Length: 165
Image (spheres, helix red, strand yellow):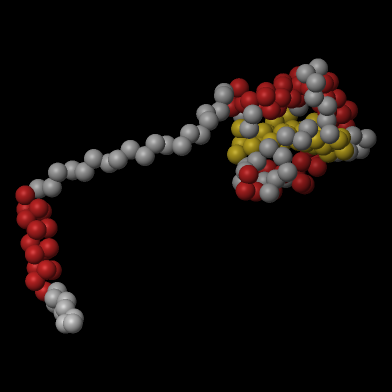
């Protein structure tokens, strides 16, 4: 994932914290899970106004850096507000809805991150160079056994017959 997306998620977390959102969980989705986004950002609001205020502040903060949501769902009911930024999706739940839907269990293959994890630049996976292993020197007895076994194999195998022309 690009560092820019991680910074956007971190900025959304700060906006949630500024509105006193509770139980913030960042899920980095596993590519093999079939998820349609890179991150889920899940939090809880204690009442409908707070749920809406969290969603509003995240949108306001990200709009300042030029990011607008692709879609917003559930805002009027304020039980579960979903704000889709394509590379990450914000889920702001009421306490009751969060327990009922339990997204963390549903997406248990995802990696849980802390806000501090987002700030750390993720190490780029590099292909490891194949380093030849150094073979330990054989002991004299082992060498003698190897030579003996090759000699006995040669003696026990039948010789190939030549075709006469």
